[in-house]
Image 1: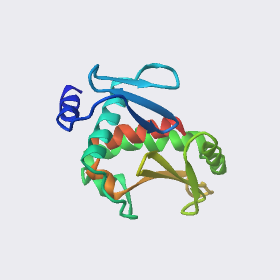
Image 2 (image 1 turned 180 degrees about the vertical axis):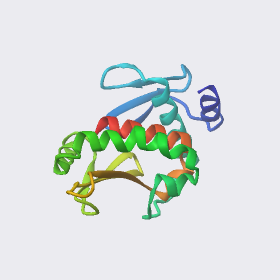
Image 3 (image 1 turned 135 degrees about the horizontal axis):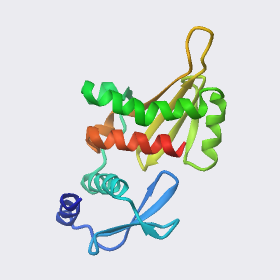
Image 4 (image 1 turned 90 degrees about the vertical axis):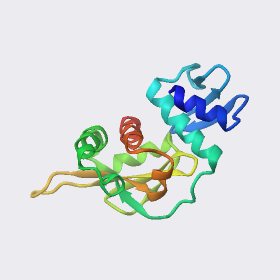
Length: 177
């Protein structure tokens, strides 16, 4: 965390900086080294603060252009070792919650910024941070196979977040949806 705050200081970030993340807005105070949730007026948890700091550092350096190319976590990371953690933190919670009723996923759009997509039986694209879209997809089960889900990312996400950050981000998305 200190490394991220130091990097932000090098980028001359000053004053209170607002950042929208999922359904909440946060304010960063670089001098106090504090990230605060505006909805509940409390300090953000460390893992949330680190994601927000990494995003803000990328924003100050210049966010990459969206590629319009969706990629699975496995395609982005190229690291087999992270796939089980990704599935456990991101995919399985979505299947447990919406696997029996994929269209119920659309109710998420009442509280999170995003839109429907037609890439699966039920899919949405969430604007997790400004210019950081994530696609959540669900497929109905049948007599042969159970329900399935996936999260897809614009390929530009790897210019903002490292693999570990993407796993944490995906877990937070799964918890929010």
